[in-house]
Length: 250
Image (cartoon, rainbow, N blue to C red; front, side, top):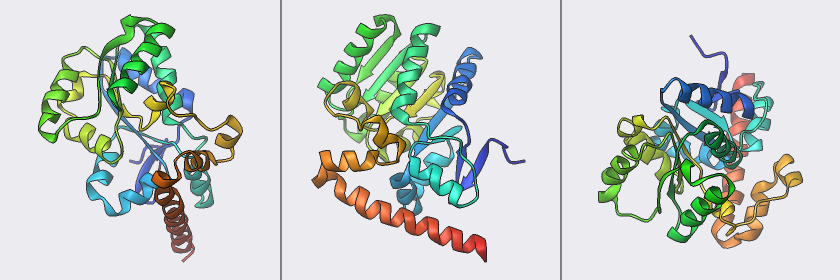
């Protein structure tokens, strides 16, 4: 029986939850001392999943899948399916760190450069309390260290784990070590969110986020690094959605 709060979008399950409903579900899971794996999808990740089977499997294996990009929300509606709103990964993380302070949960921050992740810990310590910090680790390591890092996180008594590593590395890491990390109540990948929290990268204005142009703001900031991801990636995403619409009409 299909979950009534989940749709199929280009062979990817997506939960049709609002930000608050997502937070409530996570909080409820933590209060029951259970575990929940989470991921967000955007246009770029949807395109990458078409050719990367390991990434696709890592995403669909997650317990909770939110639409991060506004383009996903609009495309789903274009295909006759409903997602109430985007649930931005960075906004969800911010809300969950606040919840951690209110509920006395502990957070582990894994990823980014040492100066970035340590600044994130400092920001949240100053804003809330050092009591919410279970530990942190930068995202620069050799593959042979993965198991040790997963074990280190599992032994930290963290309730929430935020992983700021590039895709598909973070999704594959969280899926590969899912059993080891099951002692952590909630795990999610947060991409470049640490850079924003630490103040190294600016985020698009709210009005650009609302009209689905956050990607353009990032493109302007880092054109050499982002042009292929957004220009070519967005074209491929539109192509996928149009093909799906045509197939639905047949």
